[in-house]
Image 1 (cartoon, rainbow, N blue to C red):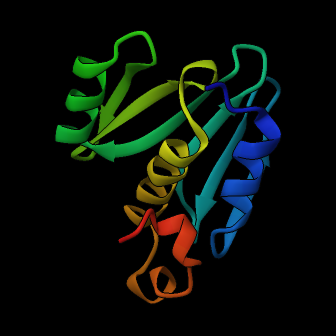
Image 2 (image 1 turned 45 degrees about the vertical axis):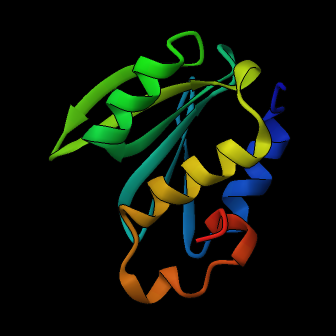
Length: 118
């Protein structure tokens, strides 16, 4: 059930125009200057941009895997514990986080597997 950090990076790297920024304790991910995710290796967690309703649904359904990170600009950021999520579910959440930040013309360039069957 656990997803390793290298699998998370493989998922992110399949997306178009992702830029990484290395902080002291985390890596952030953005598309065209808009952040959509973070990775904290020490805690084996990622933070992902979601809609407010998706944030609430994830945290309500599985509080042992998801927690509220913060809300900003009408979006709800979610902390995801990599030890509690499967790769296909994480891929869908990462794609959604990216899609919420990416311009429409980039969304069409994403591989089908990354779109979670959309």
